[in-house]
Length: 417
Image 1 (cartoon, rainbow, N blue to C red):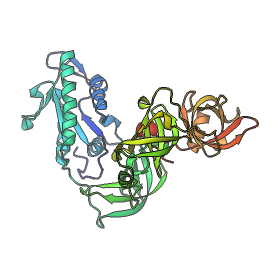
Image 2: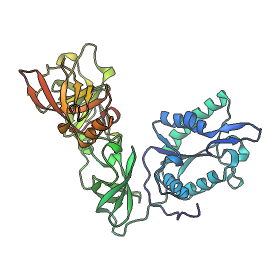
Image 3: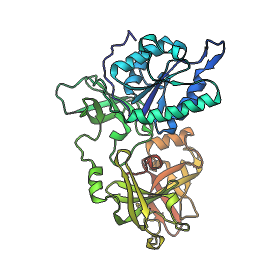
């Protein structure tokens, strides 16, 4: 990595695990060949996902054309690093040293003790081999170490500090976007990472590509963290509603709420402001049917502020009040049943709970992103879209709706208004 200036200029992305390992098929000392791509995709990646973390390799990281630059960016952005020393790959050894310079928390794998570079022999590593029993044992130990190492305090090299310190409002432009985050470039040339949790207090965005495109302008700020790092955020100066929520709706409190939407995950009920809580579907009594607008008596079961999650329990089915009919302004969840791109009508029909006839979504009532999907074949039958009722024709039994921004509630377990 001699072509790259090893200066810290990227913020870690929460839950990201960088896997440093050989690529492709490599010969082993015993004359056999080992497929490291298979090992990553079917074994390592699956194991990391099972712990709730996100695995990446260097070929999946945004960065400049230089391979060294991509690897350095990936190392900086990782919360944890898994290093596989097998086959004594020099690139792996070099990337290990770069991660060590930053102070990354790491887990080590190797097929043989001799694979580990001589100057760092003595590292505790997880052995593995092609056999089923050996792979299963390695996966079990990797899960344990991921959980344990993640709990260790991070002591990493800080980003280059800003001279002014604190929070600096800075308009920026999106230069790259993935599902997890957007990379932005300020007008003065500085770069930063806008993570999903720094966009909206009411929810976590599970797919940033649905909200941002390269070239978009954003009004945010670079913010110095207590640890000395730096991030780009759209929430600078805004009070965190989750701090107040813990006081106004502590665990155990019972209150009457309005059903916001009904989804596969369960029923979302408005708690306060833009925050909704989830009654998991598996906890609903048999025979209870809820729909948007209905009133329910619920109890706060758990609050997970970092993940923007509130879990509720239904007090009892007898407290459910009948919901009113669909009216203007109601939020609905619609399942696509018919698609007609512009030139063939320019609309989508969607099935919603409580109606036999589908509702009508015209292209002029779609967000720009959904309208592009309509005309490019990006909408599929069975896809679920968040809607708001704009007009009700009682005599003709017709309901007209508009597309509203994706709430991401299945993953985040909370929604925004």
